[in-house]
Image (cartoon, rainbow, N blue to C red; front, side):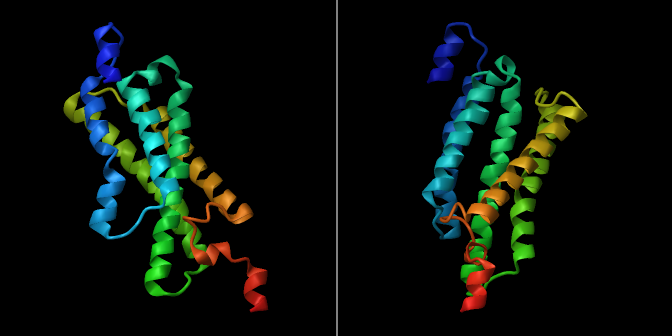
Length: 185
């Protein structure tokens, strides 16, 4: 509705994108139903805030054009959010196997999750520019900056996990337990 009103008063907006994004906000609920799992509220909230700040405010309301640094911040934040998703994937794998995964493997999955999504996102932007004439990318430097920002966000999430054992609702149990705790038992 906001995008429609802003477009009506003459500001550059994309109301059709706002409608698509309203539908995309239901992705966590759909994932819970399809995968028969629960997604912790922290990850769901982060996803909603990401969708509002990134695609909605950035694209539909044209904040990317008004504030150039916004794109880098959104890609960095997506790295944090997707590393959280990687943590949840590892946690669910450990729960399913009823056994801890090796730390090196868990941390690799957690880091590669935002990296893979960043690369896939940039491929989709490239395809969109070529196939339907959007202007999502402004060159190789923009693409690489976006991938690096997402990767750095993922690395921050891993640092918070390793140093502070946070976020507890998403992190695999094996990564929440300190090595000294394991030796004592």
